[in-house]
Image (cartoon, rainbow, N blue to C red; front, side):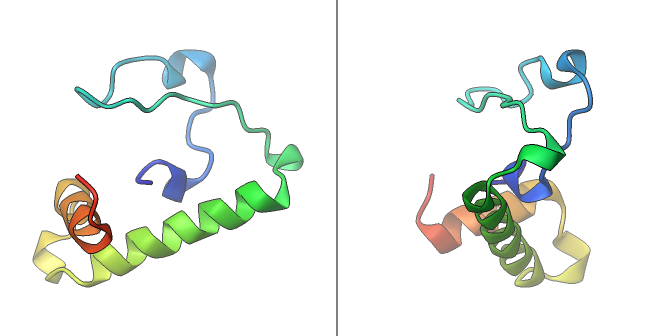
Length: 79
């Protein structure tokens, strides 16, 4: 959800390649801005809303990615 909530973030194949999250199963998926299906656009917006809600529930001094992700996992029962 974290990356999905940001929409399209990688500009090149090289910038999308790598092991960014140890133990994570995420993979980059090509997404061309003009070809985004409504269902995908809706899911990106849903993920963004979930991320924003988790982030806003934290104290302003503790709204970094790690804390927000932990809060999101807590709110959704994820692990």
